[in-house]
Length: 324
Image (cartoon, rainbow, N blue to C red; front, side, top):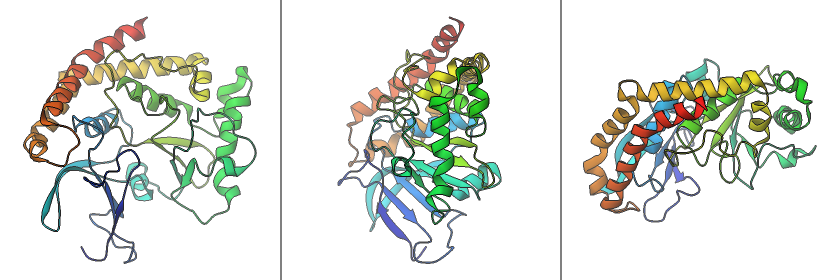
């Protein structure tokens, strides 16, 4: 395909020796698409020695009924030189939203890490929200149109009365979907997600064009499978929304139910272990051939073994934790 732009991509994944890239198909030719896509991410697998975490995690989100970007592995060549094993990732953009929900005409925001943020109210000024929630659609609209509902979401999360918190939040956040999203992340032992160690990270926020109610979309899961003994109430006091939602009996029950559902879905017919095995079988030879990867082949083998062990032990651990 001609007349496309290629640019550096990512933050922690940036590397001068194995480039993380984004290909934009319509940068110079308006409305040009490749397989219906406006752009495509080339993930260099720089931070994951197993090279399967993000791919398997996205498949698990989809298994649990949540929209997730499509992914596929590839050998990447630049000017006929083999650059290594990469993952092709469908970007979260209005085309993704339209494909997964039927309507991509609303307001989409990418959460950008600028400083630790735990869902607290940041004040009246939109300047506190704009750097954290980067508009990825309808960018030319006023700050008031873009950011008033986001500001009110976090105001309500922090300030609404305990007795009516869930009802007050409903116009601004699909709290049930939020708790479902977090439960899946926690089952997968995500250490850099909504309940990340340095605050919220790696998600998109979306609302319909005629609504103020937001939902989350998943992104960047290469730090999942962190620890099979990862607590199901990890950092439950840190994030304002999660902490207050847990105090609502129906939402707490929903969260625990989704965790149990995740455990069953992962264990059924050894689905999670099978997904890992299929991904490893697909990439094994190319991963070993990749001379630009950050990790040795021995580290690759050890990381794959750890991910497999997670798949075998995590479901039972979560079932027991939910029962407690």
